[in-house]
Structure formats: structure tokens, C-alpha cells
Length: 338
Ligand code: ZN
Image 1 (cartoon, helix red, strand yellow):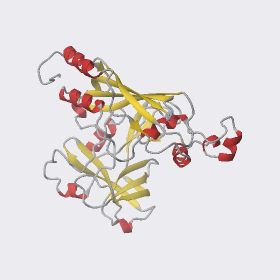
Image 2 (cartoon, helix red, strand yellow):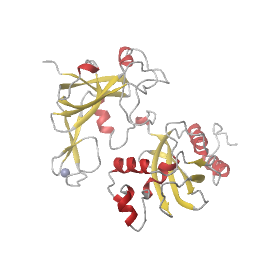
Image 3 (cartoon, rainbow, N blue to C red):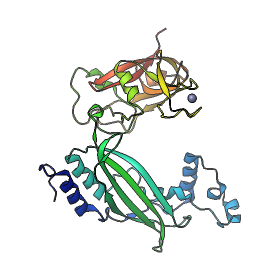
Image 4 (cartoon, rainbow, N blue to C red):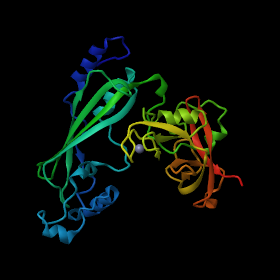
């Protein structure tokens, strides 16, 4: 309906988008992949470190006001997640595409609110129906100017009774000139084939480096790596170092900070060898290392220069850098040379 390539005024464009999408159903009804069950509940409680025994201890739960195990309310959305299968195309994808055409190419989730009407119990079967609630006017934010897109999904049980709602909001924004990288999740960065081909311009699609999502809190770090420096945040109130970057000191809650440059030496704390799934364009397993830097913080980066079978916890490492392209340089560990 709306052709954003036309030079239509922004207000007309967004009015047309609202006319088309606000109030529309998100997509087909979602059916819980599994009934509510105690195994998923136990795993979720482990992951969230929730020790409330009414979720996991059948005997104790039976003597509680619930009369048996119940699911943590905050687990609501887990019951309608469909694993690693591709999500069916929904209206939000269409809205994102329309906004991207108009220049709002980056997407970040901003907030989520849930309401709970009753506890779910093992055996319950959940069905969800969602609507597009609103598309905001253009707003100025720290990330860039953009539109908030809000959806609301209502979950029902097998009797058609409402059990909860899930509001989810994203902002589709025009990235600031500096943060021109596509917004993809932060991730282990890399692969040997890219390094070997570093003289060639990176292909537009399928490039093996997953780009970090640079935010106001993290941009100093990536500006540092561009100069081949690893910068560690330091609280100027209590001098505590911290990494990954955070706006507030976890020790004294001060918001004031500066940075110190890491010397680039550390020891291997832990690692994984990524075999599957490999990022597109990557053909060989690679090592992602978590190292204790000598300064006392931990840094995550790929580890090169050693075969997976030769890696040992505690091995000394040095930090090097790989220039991906003009906008991105990433740290890379290598075994320290004796
Ligand atoms: Zn502090």
C-alpha cells in the first residue's frame, strides 16, 4: 500500500503504515510446542537460578497452596517458543521491512511486559494470538531516530481461558552514521577463512564475521580495538575495573568511569570449539576463548594459532587484532610466545 521509495512526507508514510497494520493479527495462532511440563520448568529454573521449590519439588509443592508443581509465571513466553525452527513470517517482519525501506534499517528490542492471570501447571496446553498494538511517531533516541513497534500476544489455555499477556516492543531506527554496521547480535567474531582473505573487500552477504551491536555503552571498546587497543572500563570513584562494559559500577554504583589500556596478556580461563552450527562462510571449527587478562577482567575472543586438541586451561595468551574492514577490528587471542 505505501511505497516508501516515493518522497512522501514521513507523517503520511507512518499514517499509511498504521492504517495497514495497527490492530492486525500478528500471524497464525501459535500452539505450544509441548504441554507445560516439569522438565522444561526445571531447566528454566536452573538457567534463571530460581530456587523456589514449588516449581521443582513435587512433594513440597503438593503441600503448598498450589497443591502441586506450577510453572514460574515469568516462563510464560517459553511455552510458545518453537525451538530453532524458523519463525513463521509475521506482521512485524512486514513492518520492519517497510520501515527498513524508509531508512530505519536497525532493530533493537526495547522492552517487554507480561501479565499473569493464573499459574500454568504441567499438562496445560497453551495457545497464543497476537496483534500489532501500535507504531509510534518518529522518536529521537540514544540509538538514533526511529519508530517503536509494539505487539501484544495473549496466551490461552486448553479451555480458552486467558492465562497471560506478553507485550513486546522493538525500535526500528536509522543508525547514526558511526554505527553503520548492521545490527546483529554480539557474538564470537570469526573465522580463519576471513583472515586469509583479509586483503579482499568483504562480501556484502554471508560474511563470516558476525558484527557486534555497538551501543553508547560499548562504542569506546570498539573505538579502542580500531586502534589495536583493548580498553577496560575503570570506575573513577572506586577504581574497580570492569568488562564487559556497563554503565554503572557493580561495586559502588558510580556512573563515572574512564578506561585503562590492557597490556594484552592473560591466561585461558575457558573455551569452546565451535563445530556446529558454523556461521555462513565458515568451513572449519574455530575456538572461542574466555581469558583472564592480567588486569583482572575476562575478555572473550577467538583463539588462533593452536590446534583445538592442544588447548589447555591456564595457557598464557596474548591479544592481537584482526581488521575485518574499515569499520570493525576485533581482538583475537594467540598462544603467548615463550
Ligand atoms: Zn566503583
